[in-house]
Image 1 (cartoon, one colour):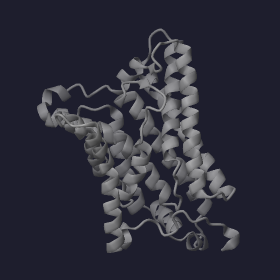
Image 2: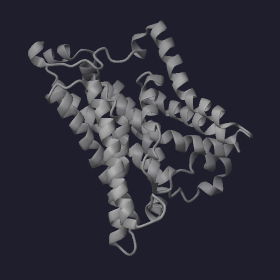
Image 3: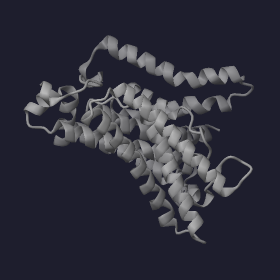
Image 4: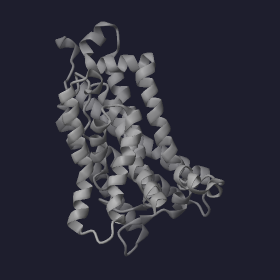
Length: 325
């Protein structure tokens, strides 16, 4: 049972890790993107649409294409959402909070619209789409994992996107802390006026970090459908994972490396009620609140300690216009 709980926690936490890593990169540029839930939703439905069209067009799928096509579709869809956010907030100077919330509503609406359209095409009594062939490709495990006992079950029994999420988080942490690009990005988030005066292209860094962060977050939506949900899409089935990803950013104090462990903790808190005998529905809802409660506690502690490295970027959520410098 312990092994099963750990596996479910990792699988539950992987979408959160994708979302939080993407949001950390975005917030490091000074942009508070509350559109992450909608972006993850669009990333999921874009991958589903690409996979659906591919499965319908061939008699026998190619495993490589079955993975690449939804991956590309997901990356393109979520990147376009990030581009829309940047165009509105950077180029048109729209309010970041309002734009992000509007993007979430827009993304969920787009997902439900196209999801409902695809469901009508399959003509099924159940309001869902089952992409089991593509899902099997995403869920393929290492061939020797079953021979390694508990070690293989805990560490090597997942689809490739779980390892991609961890690698992306570690690479993001390295870039932010050990490279010149990361230094420039953090400078833009802390003081865009100073960065601009130093010759750093603030607009370029804001666009790139937000679009790349959106693409990473979109993969979280794709993972949820293709791996965690076994390739089954149903409208409004994504839950509150987008908002949990944003909460995880605060929990991890804007560090992608810490968000790896934080995502597993959030996943554990999410799945543990299932394994408690005789738990009531109300108690289960209380457990689902725990990630947010833990995040609030971390936010209070970091605010009281007031350490610079644990604080959000100084210019987070604040607009920057070069003409007003």
